[in-house]
Every structure is written in C-alpha cells, then in structure tokens.
Length: 121
Image 1 (cartoon, rainbow, N blue to C red):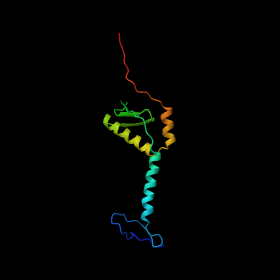
Image 2 (cartoon, one colour):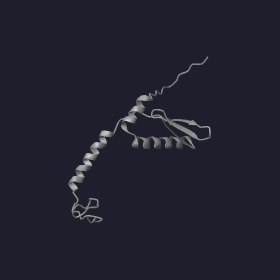
Image 3 (cartoon, helix red, strand yellow):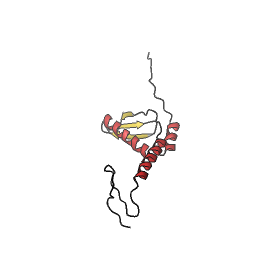
Image 4 (tube, rainbow, N blue to C red):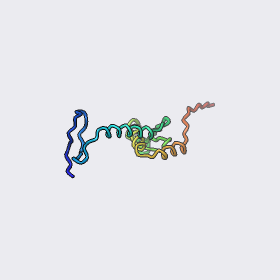
C-alpha cells in the first residue's frame, strides 16, 4: 500500500492527511469523531475545589510552594516564581493523573483554610 502525503479534497478548509487509494478520506467520519471526542472530554472534566498555594521561604534561600489539597510541592527563586512553578506542576499532574487518584487525594487531605483571630493579653 502506497501512502501519499496529501489527498485531494474538495473542501479547502480541510486539513490534509495521510491516506491511500484503498482508504480515501472520510470527512463525515472525521467530523463525527471530533464530536465524540469532545463528548468524551466532557465526561472526564471534574470540578475542582479552590486550590491553595502556601509559599514559604526555604532553608536555601529559595521559596517553597505547597498545594496542601493535592500534596504537590515546587520551588522558585522568588515567591512569584515559586507560585508559577507550583501552578505548572499542578496542571501537569492533573493532565496525567487518573480521576480516582485526584478524588482520593482531595478526600484524604481535607484542608480547611480559615482566618485566625487571636486576642493577646
């Protein structure tokens, strides 16, 4: 079977794809596949609670950023950089984490963030 770099298409907006004489492009199938894929993506989207970033100076002069709800930690030279690195780490972890693992961590690590009012004598 010989592959050609692009098939002739009548629709100018269609993106060229590898195809063969035996399997011509099926644009109707591609359109329905895109719809199904979008539907599947909606199934895997879960609503996350507000996540917290706790940023503290570390022992080595860098700043340590922690997301206590998920147990993810990162660091940076400045508080802003530590926050950006933590955000990236959380996003990357969420991309590859299984939904059950995300739910487990959120349920296991119940974190309450409250203002503390202290009266002193």
